[in-house]
Amino acid sequence: MRMPSISEYLHTLEHPFGMFRTLGEPVAERDVYGKIKFRAGNSSAVFRLSDGRRNFMLKCYIRPKPRLRTIYDYVERNGSPLLPRQKIRPDEIYVYSDSGEAGWYDVVIGDWVEGNTLDRELLRALTEGNRERLSELSEKFDRLCSALLREEWAHGDLKPENIVVTPDGNMTLIDCDALFIPALAGENAEEIGTPGYQHPARGIHHYDKHIDDYPMALLSVGLKLLSLDPSFFDPQRDPGSLPFAPEELLTDKPPAWDAACRTFAEAGAITHRRLLELLRSPDPSLENLERFFAPGKESAEAPLHAFERNGRWGFADPTGKTIVEPLWDDVLDFHEEIAAVRIDHCWHYIDRRGELLFESSGYEAAGSFRNGTAKVRKNGETRWIDRQGNEQPAPEPNK
Image (cartoon, rainbow, N blue to C red; front, top):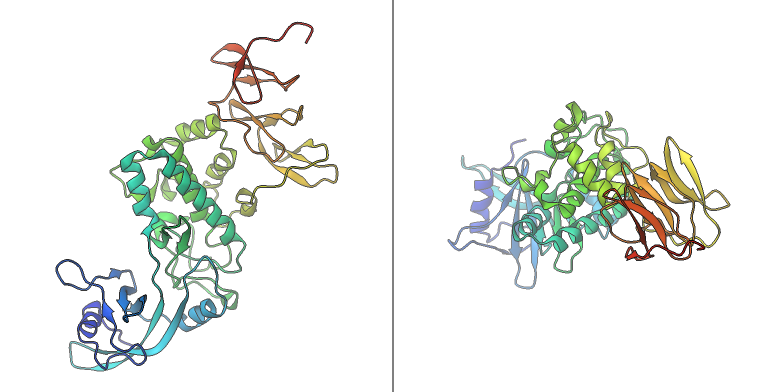
């Protein structure tokens, strides 16, 4: 089946009278030169239209998409707060080809999502040196991942260009063409996403709930790293690419690897330090990824005990329920509701929810809290700190 070209769709939008089955005569958004604006992808073009009452998205296809109706029927029936409202309109637009042939074609229409894509927001924050905004983008993306992992579907082409940061600061996913949905379980993928964000081993047979695992981890690590140290951004690279490319991570440790590990360790960013290790996995599906993006736990009232799993340490309550995930290289028991924990060469302090107690550049050694103070070593010097990390005089010998 021959599909129209973008120029043929543009011709229809220039002269919409009688060309839409249900949409009337919508007006397409134009640029300052009067030309219709659109965003082109590998298999479609997206236009912003107005019917006089609202703006909406029109997606027209230049390549056949056999699963289009199945995917968008699912999206319409099973709406998600992570996706704009969208639905397929079969045989909606009438298009003349350049050769004079004509026919009706399916389109997708949906809410127009206001805001900038994540790659644009990221580049602006980096250009302005806005560390606060970089941290906010990192945190918002991790919350998006947490919500996405709880869905029964997966996006299939997760990348900054497909994430819109809305004016209220939330993140919304766009472009559902590569979605995995339960009804397609056991099928091969029609497309495998953008290579710069996908595991090099991903093929059409990787098509299940876990197809977003690798790009989620890659983007989470990159955004967090840039929020901690914007100098990791290389202006010669696409801003959406972030500090690491998948093929670099799988063949050898990239030049920035050691520096990234050190940055995460000094900041106590244990989740992202472990995600960085996962990026070298030979499998596109990452085991138990949910635990890295789990919402913050409530503080346990019962005593917590340290436990070890696969060489990493965490804390559990007396029933054996994990309260602090076993991600740390070493830990000390809780004293005065605070525990010292180590990542690589750096020690930090956490509360009973597993949250860092205060920011620091990491200690070379750390002791437990006693009477509100703890003994630490930093830059080769022994010091005493209070529960806020402020330096204190050494306690009296009898204390």
